Length: 210
Ligand code: AMP
View 1 (tube, rainbow, N blue to C red):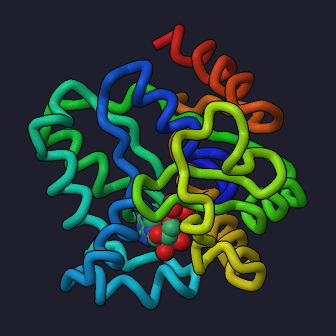
View 2 (tube, rainbow, N blue to C red; view 1 turned 120 degrees about the vertical axis):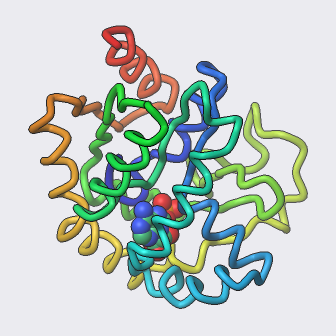
């Protein structure tokens, strides 16, 4: 969990590789639906483009279907869900039905100026979803996979005015979710600044206690 641009996607992908459980990113699922032009995609597109949250009823359908799939039986990394108090209740219900429990809620933190810098320079490979940054992780950087650099795109919701709105939505709707997990002692705060591998080691220390 954490505000837009804090590194949730990057860290969730790393965890997925290490733990060999699926990365369940509601943002990626919604963007895929928009890209495919499905019925769901057409319904959610205006919300994504405006940086608003998709209504809870639609999110419930999406998450129930995803967590019920076979590949989620041994666990999963949730990225971007739950984001509202209602979604916390939905998740509790779904986990109860699956006989699963939440091990940890990692909350990444980064100063707001850094979030804006990260989001405005973020670029995405439309094919595989790999993330780049025009300054700190340019396409030509070491470790970047074979690329067609011109094809990288900026997410429409990474434009400055939409970013500001997403940060407000986060403060209003998602901070209470973090408080809920902190009340249950599931919440582990992790400094999200610096090199992604350093952040990942901080997360590992929190995981070691699971
Ligand atoms: P993300 O990639 O997690 O930043 O999500 C991108 C956008 O997808 C958000 O700004 C919302 O419009 C939508 N979205 C993703 N996850 C959720 C969620 N749990 N509830 C509502 N909307 C969501």
